[in-house]
Structures are given as C-alpha cells and as structure tokens.
Image (tube, rainbow, N blue to C red; front, side, top):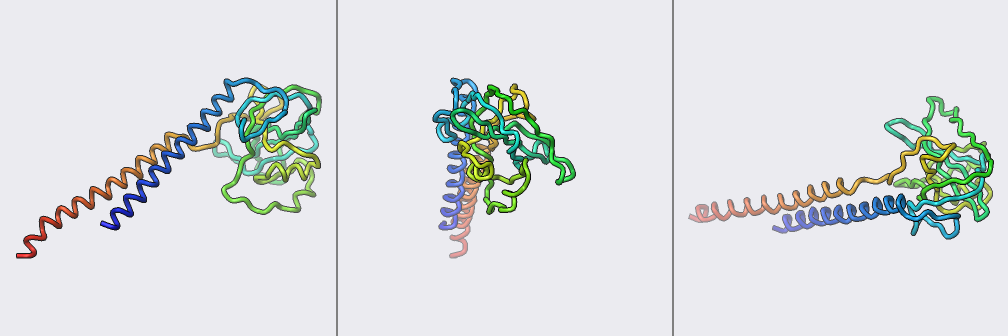
Length: 231
C-alpha cells in the first residue's frame, strides 16, 4: 500500500507538472502571436526581452559589418550551420540583429560569406533572447583574439559586448523575413508545443491510474485467497 501511494503520488505529480509546462508554453506561443499582431514599437527606448519578448521593433541605424558573430551549432532540417548576429548601431544604442541561418561547409576553417553594407537603413525585427544551453561552459579566452567574424558557442550578450568594445542591449532582434540582407528566417518559439506536454501529462496520469488498479486487483485477489489459506 505504501509503495502504491508513493508511486501514484509521484506519477500524479509529474502529470501535474507537465500540465503546468503546457500552460507556460501556451503563454509563450500566445505572446509570439500577439507580437505579430500587436503595435509596432519605434526605437530601442525601454525595449527588453523580459516584458516585450516577441514584440515587433523598428529601428533606424546601420550595421557594424566588421564585428559579426556566427552562433555555432545551430542546425536546421538536420543540417548544421550558424545563425548570423550583426550589431546594429542606432542613435539610442546598439543591439544584435539575428539575420538568420546559414549552412556550414564541410571545412570548419571556411566560414560562410555574411558581408553586409553599413549604409543607413530602417529595419524591423522581433525582440527575443539569445539561445541558451542547458549547461553553460566557461568562455574560451582565445576567441577574443580571433579575427571577425567570430564563431561563438552560446555566448551571452555581455560576452559579445566585451568583444565588440561597446555596450549592446540585452536581447537580440530577429530580423523580419521580408527585410533585405538576411538569410533563412523561419522564426518561431524554439520550444516543445503545449500539445506534447499534454500528451506526457496523460501518460503520467495513466501510469498513476495503472498503479492504483494493479493494487486493487492484487488486494482483491489476496482477500479472496486469504480465507482458504486459514482453513
């Protein structure tokens, strides 16, 4: 009975946790949809990824083409590649613009062509955080002396700011697919969909119910057999 209570409680708790995760993911996908249809913000101003994640932002300024970053280990459709981060300098500050995904060649020593003009331009993008790893390793000090563009694995904005020599806002701007000078941009939240969490929740609740049913069957059989054993 004790084992049944422990197992059923554990599986039930995991099911409830998955339901909570599904709710969190629904909120994130809703924020993404709202950012698509919501008001367009002009200028960096008080933009931040905490309160305005996925909101559309329009900026006027120019790219810093000489200090670009290749986000390493970014795959698409099973193919390895990079996401291109280019600093964008405006009158109100600077921010990293993610210009999209490019494939990597078989030769790690040969980087893709990501040249871009530094002419004055107006662009629109979506506020988001930089990709984060499950486990962050210490930064490679040798990278700070490498030529640009630099290939970095899950850097923070602070680390990139140190390398560029000027402050960058603590988020990236996902360049709109219809903007020029970009690469492959199929933006969407890089998250498990809520329906999958619901499926996992059903499985955990099913296991909890199975444990209880098995206990009831075994207990019933024990009660049926016990009187004959006494005689």
